[in-house]
Length: 162
Image (tube, rainbow, N blue to C red; front, side, top):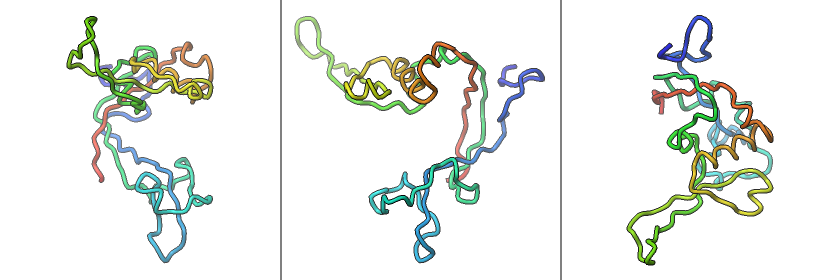
């Protein structure tokens, strides 16, 4: 099961699969571009309800296609710091590291956002990307969902359509 797939464990997207990416999009009228994407420059477009959530995006509007190059199955809590960062957690600050004598060491420490309404209000952050990802996971999947430690699919892919 080196590729994360087997007869017993049906892989939703085996190696070689092509996946289309959904984005928040909008359609104003036929005088301009038929579709526009919030990720491009949202300030160029009105913010009065023209945006449609990505889950409703038709495949014909997708401008990004990915090809699966690797698949593995792992427990959620086994996520590495590098994988947590690759999931898109936000950097909130980069600070200098100081020695015990008070001088800068030349090192930098990256701080990541804590997610969740009560934590965002406090503007908390951490230098541990896995803790940041844990709070993001629970803000999406509900309180206590991290401790359930479900099996998850971890994909690597390459972009094949710009």
